[in-house]
Length: 432
Image (cartoon, rainbow, N blue to C red; front, side, top):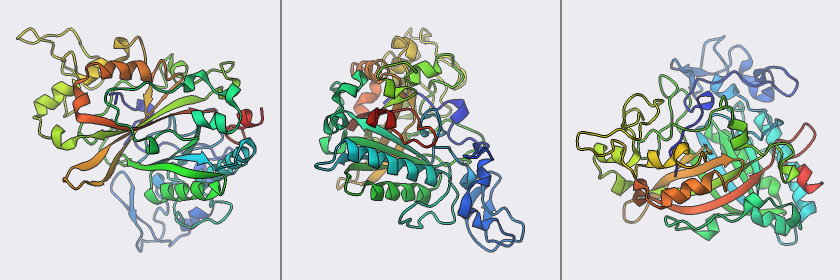
């Protein structure tokens, strides 16, 4: 688990962004389709708080805002890079992997990706699924829904496309903190779903599962969450279940090398991955009972940052560069040599960087009373062998946080660039 943050432009908890243009170039709020049925005067709706968070529906005076900005925010499916990579963290998420069914190959995979792409396009616009919509998200807007598709290493064997498999999909090395459950790792196909409404997210998950039909079956599925937009008085970096401000050094869209670090360039190899990225997915269990026994001061020394505001122990604010050479009165480094934030800094790893976009998870309380909780770690990079792998190897050698976490599942997926209008995700691979 690395300690970076969402870019300021997409920081969790930020005020809702101006809706992206719809498919016809109009504002997204003009394309919410039937789910704007609350727009008539006298429709029921209740908006509470300065942030405008939707609290539920009740009788409201005529002229009240029928659909909150939280619900009307929309991401667009047909874009250069697939949605769900640089978009703001959503409050609800589902990660699900599929294996192709016995006998299914390239033809069936192409038909499946076409169905999935059409469904994602419709749902992200706030429209019902084309076939057998469950009405779970009826009355709701798009709620910043994103659906992202990727291919695992095994997909290329199943479809006879081994020659098109990227070298970057080489198996990840073993790490000392790994306790991997193979049944909850890898997969032929991977889908990431995120939304700011739990019903909208579940609706998309159910639609994707149903559209798989007989072509693919679920291998594993995980549910996650983040702080809801507007829950804080100002945009803030998210906290994880350890209570720490989780990450401050994510690449930012304004950085000169942002695209180079995150996306495969046009003309790169293989050609079908142009404008795509690679997702490393890890289920990282936090040993919270052990962690919470530590004093705040001890927790801060493990991370290398203040728990209250995420500022480095060397001083300043969260955004202040960490002074790795600063020492205390006893001559020791103020930021310990094995502090998580020190080890994960890009300048301590040959410039290796990745964009973290995780969800927290909680899967209940064990028989011993300990919570099964932690982080659904998702990170994006142009090449995992230059992004995730060198940083995780260094963490493996001496990260103070390692004794409080356990990696229980893992996957690596090639996520191609966004589909053009009229195309489906992966078309250049499957029909090239």
